Image (cartoon, rainbow, N blue to C red; front, top):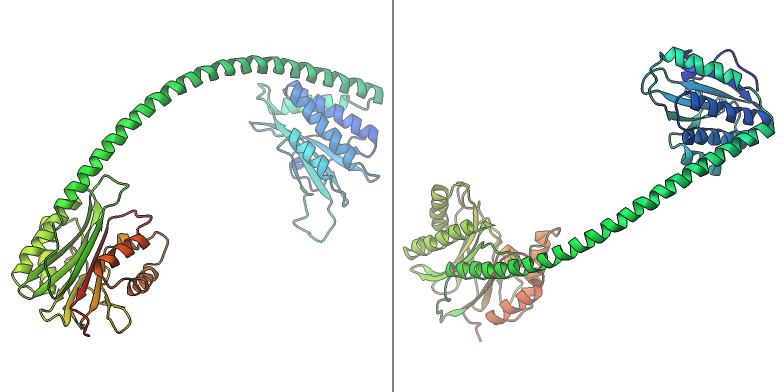
Length: 463
């Protein structure tokens, strides 16, 4: 192993004299022994403890033996002058040799900061054969001495740590192994003590956990009872805002189902209405956005206002305009959807006015089902509402109105859900009560929101 006076070409850090400590050639097994000895000396003088000294020496010994070829390679000892400082050894070679995966893995376990890659200069001339380089290093503790003085002290010691005989190297490795075993024994004793403390702590934690579990179980029973009481109260209160019964209608058939979401104690804003007016039978389904007592209060006010305005004989679009102004004036931060269907007294036509709600479904007795999709803006946004849509119907036509809780599923397309509902309802029972039950059984298995299903048969099918 020979000293190299000048920095190796293409070595970026080694180009700085304050950074490079020593550059040596490695081409024999004896050179690898000397490299190992020098690495331990440099690590000791840099302030690293015995364990880190052995780690660096073992890593370079492993790499040296793995990469040893007839063609020499260069080992450069480096010490960064700035704090925090790092002691590193960089191995470089000019040919296509590469470290084995086993050797590289072993060294990386010893020194996780190991870096392996092409030698410097490959980025300027990718086609040339620049060999490779691998760098191992460890951060070193601060030193009160000037960086240049520390570097010079380590450089002199490295020069003095010249070649050694294989016997001396074996003795050195044996001493390192004994020291490592002694340290391991000390650590094992400390780990046994800590393990006993951990076991004692675990026993205390288990006792505390048992006590807390019992207390939590008792608390949960109280909370569950309270939740059930609050939920039942919410459902009872919500139902007081809805119609007590449907009106008699000799010219047709009516049925409705209302299901409150079972997994929440707050009240929803879904509502429906069915009443006779001077202009005909009025059917309505709506939804105030949100789940809270305030949402239910707004819903109740809208529904009662709808009944009052409807008994005055207003057409559907006028009802929406009146309710829109009421909502904006008294609850300016709230919005709602509402679909109104007015059935002509003779039952042969309907007028639909829709404020952003799901469209009503018509199912003729002798044709395909279809939605009346024309609609206007939501209530509460003060936008103009279009005129009502008139649709002629034949006797026996079924009408279906719902809230989105029946079919809306997170992650699915609402249009696809409406299409599926149309097919299912059209193929379902002609009896309105049976139709409502069938739709609830089909779609409400995993209910997460309030549901309203309002079904009507307009007149009777002609014989």
